Length: 213
Image (tube, rainbow, N blue to C red; front, side, top):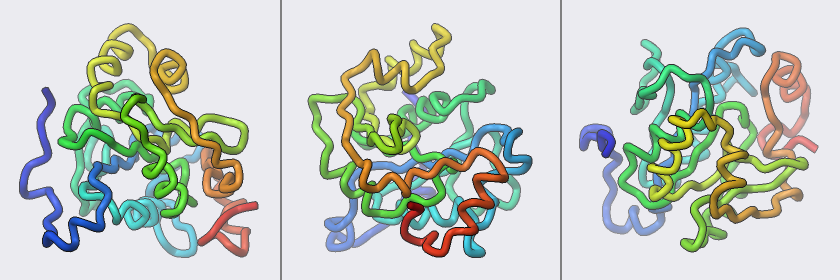
């Protein structure tokens, strides 16, 4: 079993407040060396707001939120979990999330997707089905595995996959019970930011707070 989130890092709510929250943990990935981007993506600003702050706010409706990466940045003021492995792959962050979560369902969210707002995530949550291990949006012609719900029972499968050298979340989805949700109508929310050119394209858009077309 993993190291569960300490009480000091947990959010506290009244019974009324808790009744409105999604009973799940959101894990926001800031890991990766960002070689193509040239600097930490989570610090990149859109409309003057760092990507991590945008996604942190997007996940405000979850009972638990955590930032996941290799080493905690000195300037980071949010609850943080360090990966157990130095391997660079989102599946490593998923392993960390599942090992440390006390919730059955967990949202994995990458800083590669800075335009995500609450609507796609709300739809994702409402589409969950306990017969499946993953609930994955499909938009812009691809499975959006770094904005997906993963059940905690996948923890052993994920660890075994990593041990066996399977580091692709898409390959993991192909080998697991995954439910895909059509979100093509919200494809702008899944605009992928891998390079400076991607970031510049986002900042040139007039309606960044909603969607890219």
